[in-house]
Length: 116
Image (tube, rainbow, N blue to C red; front, side, top):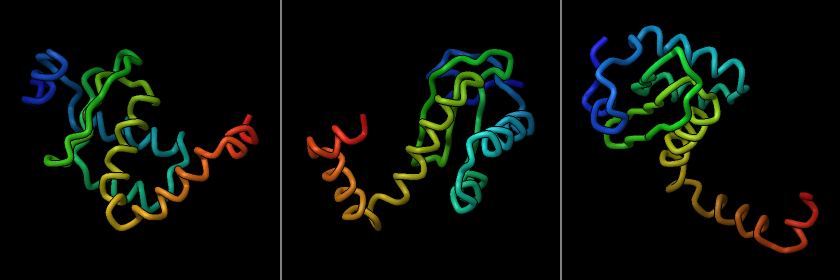
């Protein structure tokens, strides 16, 4: 199918996966990666695009103003990374203090040493 404007501009693709095929791939990702049900429910409201389903290429973008998660290929890590941007953008205002507390804890030398 013809690529979206974003797919053409950011990846230079003239074609991309059909939206229904991209959705099926993301549904498989949701099952493989054990996301929380609340996160999956939110992710299903987003525009999800995949450049090619034929290669596990990395790379992707989160466009918050468009509700778009766009990945170049089928690399799980890239998709999880972009979905994380989508999730935390939504959470960061309401849960900012909680997140900063966790980051402060993880930044303490004794805490970091216990993770190794």
